[in-house]
Image 1 (cartoon, helix red, strand yellow):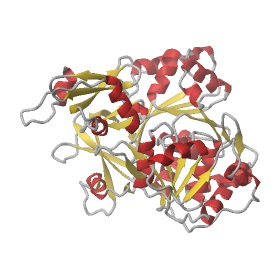
Image 2 (tube, one colour; image 1 turned 135 degrees about the vertical axis):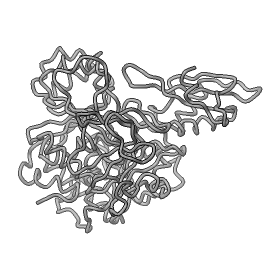
Image 3 (tube, one colour; image 1 turned 30 degrees about the vertical axis):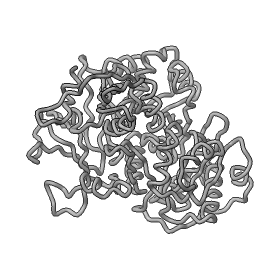
Image 4 (tube, rainbow, N blue to C red; image 1 turned 90 degrees about the vertical axis):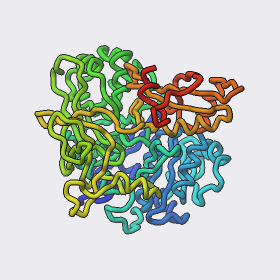
Length: 514
């Protein structure tokens, strides 16, 4: 059966290799049969509690086999899953719950107790799914197996919503259909030659778009995915040991994680005979660190992937071996199959090789839009600027690129105030909006400071109201209430005034140089 829906990827593995491990967690593992049956039971439980096709159901769980059951169970119920960041403040998580009008929430007792005080209303369907507690989880284990519900989904229906940093001061939800996700998954399976014997490492959080590859590409070929424990992920030497001990064959993460591995993990202690693919995306990989890593793990093939959440991956560049001398960043490469990418200059004309232009993307992997933000959706999903008679839309990325003579695109930067840190997309305006909530802040600006290992860190520049003093700890506490950890500035500067342009706007260039 050709899968038209993401959860249909489980069926071949459950039928053909039911005892093969699908998910390896820190405390338990799931075979394909167990994952398929547990997610079927959850789907029926959701339907019995009123979840209907198109409803949004949140997942507020730590990364675990239970969270993977939740993803597939929600999809099988005909709903769209909305993963919450377990490390985000309760107020931010509550905003997402209420913004997309969640009808259901799959969580644990502890996480619900943390979230509930920040909500104006708890979703009508709450299922407690946790490994160490009785209740819904036990019922899902004990209930008789049954085929999944048939809610009547088609491939254009919504599969999930991933919330990213928003320039308006609030996170925005990127809506991805089954078709868009499967377009990327099917391409990845073919392009990388993924196979049943592979073991994927899931390093990315489940609310981060890199996790789509880990979970669904593994299921597409009946492979196993090992969830990287958080305590392992933050210690490079432990991570190096875990990769070897877990017999990982396919790795996909942001470059900063691999940089930490190369610099501090001493991966040369292991042979890594099984690791055959190393994929990275989300930020620029400093070539000197990549060269170090390829020397430590020489048997693997390396690939640079590019694509915002709104497009899935849209370009790819195989890393040459050996790497060329010099420190010029790698290209982001060429369009994936069934995808068109092109760059336009400031006059809206195709940028010639060597010229800078803004990148546009066309193809079936594009998002449906931003949840209930029609104006922002219309600003980036446009008629084809070169062929307006075509019915489909193209996505305006906001990324500046240059095409080289060989046909590869090179990333040059952004045309707005968006930055990347540790692979996360961050709108500086959202952090600034949080800082302005402090009653003594007269002006606030946030800039990205280049960092050798993480790409960049964040610096908040503050002007206090006359007669007021501001404590750094108060600003950090305020940010911790409103923002996830990766968006909290690493440092703060206090100034008498912020630099302005002749028109009175904030001069970010001067601020960066000061």
